[in-house]
Structure formats: C-alpha cells, structure tokens
Image 1 (cartoon, rainbow, N blue to C red):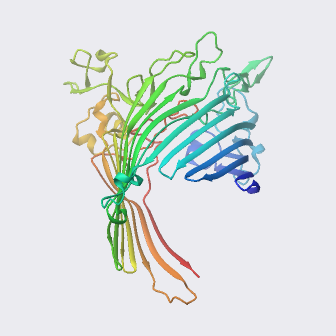
Image 2 (cartoon, helix red, strand yellow; image 1 turned 90 degrees about the vertical axis):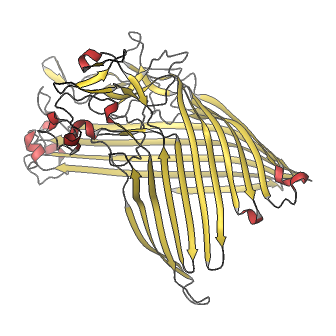
Image 3 (tube, rainbow, N blue to C red; image 1 turned 90 degrees about the horizontal axis):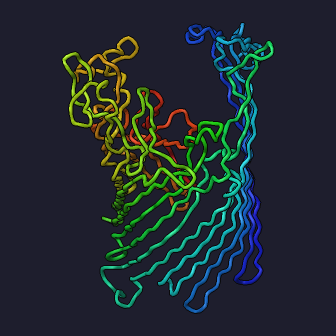
Length: 579
C-alpha cells in the first residue's frame, strides 16, 4: 500500500491538489484432506489437496481544484474534480484427488490420479485447474458548491458524472445530482437569547446516487468459458466442453437511488445538555440490477443480467443525547437512537425486462420467501398451518379457508409476514465515577417474523435416522410426515441485546512522571439476548443476492439449517497508556 499527494496554491483562495494511492493484496490458500479421512474413504476419493493464489491491485487517482472565499457575510466554497479507479485481479488454482500417499500434502498436486481422468462416473470432486484475470474501471467528474450567509442560511449543490466499465456499452455513464439546504432558526432574532432552545436547525435535501457494485466485470457481455467438471465424448476421446456463459446486455444501466429527506437538529437548555436530531426520508431505488430469467429463444442462456424493478424505503430516525450529570467525581451521559422503516417492492419489471414475482431462500424444502410487487423484500411466502389429521399428516388452509392435506392444497400459498424489523432501537449509557468508567449498550429490533429452518429438519420424526431431533419434536407433537415449510415454523423475532459492556479503571499518575496515563479495561460483546425466538440468534443476516452468483441466497429473518454462522460473544481485556 502506498500513497502520494501534492498540493499547490495558485491564488490565495484557489488551490489544486492531486492524490494517488495503490493497494495491493495477495492471498495464498491451501487445503489438504488425508486419504484416511472418513469422508474420503466413504466417497473413494483417496485424499484431496488444492492450492490457489490471488493478487488484487487497486489504483486510485484523484485531482481536485478548490476555491474558498468570504465576501462580507457570504461564504463560498467551490470544488471541482476528477477521479479514476482501476481494480485488476488475477489468480490461479489447482486441485486433485486420488493420491497414493499423504506425504505430499498440497505440494505435489500432479501426483493425484483424478486430474487427467475424464471417464464418466469417476469421482472428480475437488478436481480443477484454472486461472483467471478480470479488470474493472470507474471514472468520475464532479463539482460541488457550498454557500452560507452568516452561517444561518445554508445551500449545498453538487453534480457527479460517473462511468463504469461493467455496465452495458450503451449506458456506461450516469449523472447524479444533489441539492440540500438548511436554516439555523436559533440564530434568528426571534429565538436569540432563548433560555430553552440553544440550537435549532431545519434542513432538507434531494439527491441521486448510482450503484453498480453488485455486477461482475463482464456480466454485460457475451462470454465463453469451459464447463469445468463436465465432459463430452468426441472423436474417440473425452473432452471438456466450451460454451456461452453470459447473455450480452448492451442496455444494462446504473441502479439509481433517489432520496428525499427532511430533518431537524436541536439542543435545549443550558450548554445544550439535551440535544438530538429527527429525520424523515423516502428512498426509491430504480432499475434494480439482478440476474433474471431471459426471454428464450432469443437468448442463448436461461438468465440475463438486467435492470428490472423498483424498491422503496420510507421512515424516520430519531437520535437523542442527554448529559444527566456532569460533576467532578461523577458524570452520566445517555444516548438513544430509534428508527422506523417501511420497505416495499414497487415493481419487478422495466421497459427492457417484463418480470414477474420470483421466489428466493430455499432452505432445503423449497423456497420460503418471495420478491413480489406490493410486498416487502423477501416476504415469507408459503402455506398456512391448520393442524394434523388422524393419520398424522399436515393440514393446510386452501384459498377457500378449508383445512386440507398438502396434496389437496395445491397452489394455496399466502404472504406470511416480513423478516425485516419495523423498528430498530439503541440505548447507550456512559458513566464515570472517580477513576472508574463504564459503557453499556443495548440494542433491539421489533416487528418482524423469523424462521428457524433447523426446526423443519429436527422436529420431524421421519428424520430420526439422519438427524438429532430437538426435544420440541416430542413436546409439540410434530408428526412423521414429509417436510413442508409453512407459518408453523415462523416465530416472533423481536429481541433486546446487551450488546456491549466496557468497564475501565484509570490509574492515577503523577503529572510530571514518565507515565502520562494508564488505563485497564475489560469489554464484553453480545453478552445477553432477551427474545422468544427459538433459534441461535434472532439478529439474522440479510443476503438477498439478485445477481445469482451465490449458491445460497438468504432473505431477511431466516436462520438456515447449516449455512448460518451466528454472532459470537467476545471478551477483551486490555491496557492503554501514554508516555
């Protein structure tokens, strides 16, 4: 990693500067499984080994021209610039199995038999030889004007024009303007020398930003590649086939976010000991980038990267800070944050692509969520549980409201609630008592459903030979029947966490001594969770991958059976000091 910068003042108010940085990362990954391993013997692999190396180079250049001038009570800041970013990555790797000895580890991959074995039916798990390189470039020109009068009336205007190499040849460039304004009411005469309101600022803005990060470097182009792991018999020999990997889309454009926000900053009483902010927002994302079903037969491959759909988020955010006590021996500060968000998919279609609702989040028994117009992203979608019949089979409600078996329910599926919390809360307390200090952080989320997919597999009697069953399989009387997803497995996901607790002690030191300060501290994270959710952790990750590149796509509020890694609890002890 390296950085070079230079600046030159052309005029007292005009300055030019350039910045260049390069970040280079190299990764080496190796793996080895002995031929004595149970899995290796069970699958006749006789040992596996692999090795891969990746190098990523990120070049960033930025040139700026700034103008700062004060004209009486008027203040003007003007900025113009150009930026260039190029990321180049290359890598290679190989893997093999069927080794005659474990002594080679991963240092002699060619000794494995499987690499050159293309006979159908031969277990070639973990066998590959590949190399690759990709490059992506982002260019931008931008300008910004900041103006204020007496620091009471504020105006911010900006424009950014960006071009991305990963987008379609006809739509690589996009324009992204923004405007915001503020009014500091507390500086007006009608609020001057007010003993209650010490600061009051009204602000609002509108802006457009672009996104193309979810795209790979060449997903707007038609590319060819080898179908690794497959083979075809031609002219007396087995060969690896080549074919088209992506459909070209020259119209692939920027995904854009249009945001309107109105906010209020405030402080009350002496020294503003009670202060905070309140924000209302509406964010609309247009031209959602995803890997959608292609219009066959005009396209070669079944999927195409395209723009389709609109999503909207609207809500408010509240932040409050209060200095409860501020004495020489004792101080106490409290901070509270609260947010409400309403998410909705407005459309799943566009001028280029006529999309329909599609399912996501397959946890092993079919899809459990859906992307659909008029619903939150990843809303749960499935059957409604109606009980069990005398034979122990599941009963579900059909569209007429009758309790029927799964076979008779047919396509009777319903929207079952969202996995996105409506409310997010946070409360932080900072204490200082003499030489001791403490910080306590609570976080919570309310108003969402959660799916513990482990219950589907571990609460069903039919799985007792392959899974360790939960005790709830007995307590809840889940019958021996085929596994289905329904609202039977949906739970209330609300939670409150003791997310962070830090206790410290500052050792008294002499003012003129060698040691200027010395503090001992202990920190714990994710210490306590209060919830009725039966899974590992109700704070579930969101991985809605519309690009289709991930094998497992996890919507909001889903704890998968095996592919979920929960938040960990950590304990840290440390010492900080200065000399």
